[in-house]
Image (tube, rainbow, N blue to C red; front, side, top):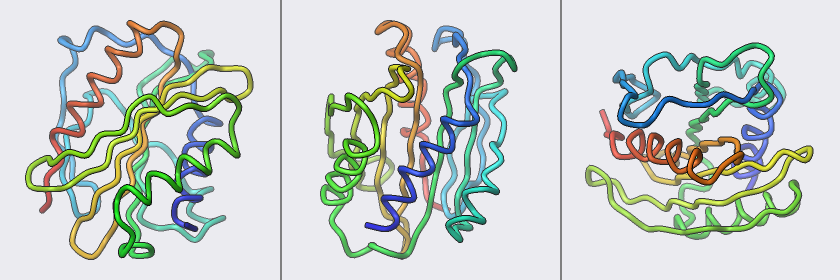
Length: 186
């Protein structure tokens, strides 16, 4: 449960550092392959690593990686994703991790609701994917949480984007879907 609170903290931390940006259409997005902890995945070209030193120092977390779209400095929110690896809670079934996260989200944020829960397998890796929305400081946001296991680690991945238009978010979610589909173990 503690690692799920850390994921919610990761989402909150990314909210503090974020800004709004209109993405290019999904068919124009180029990707680059990156090694992130024990996995490899495609990250949209131009996205930059996010400074997560505050999260790492306050929660003693080392295996956290964040990426953020390259947004203007004056924007309100910028889509981002955070990947966290933990050995704690590795014995929990993926659906239980998802339930615990959604309980935490409903306690921390305004107007949260689950949109879709999906169990899937990507490159031989079983995953639990939860799409949900919530409001933070009167800003409507969409998020996707992904839980999977890699070796003796549990991976938690969170993508957050503004909810300014349903069509705009669907393009951003499709882009993140390509990131999810690219995940493979070393």
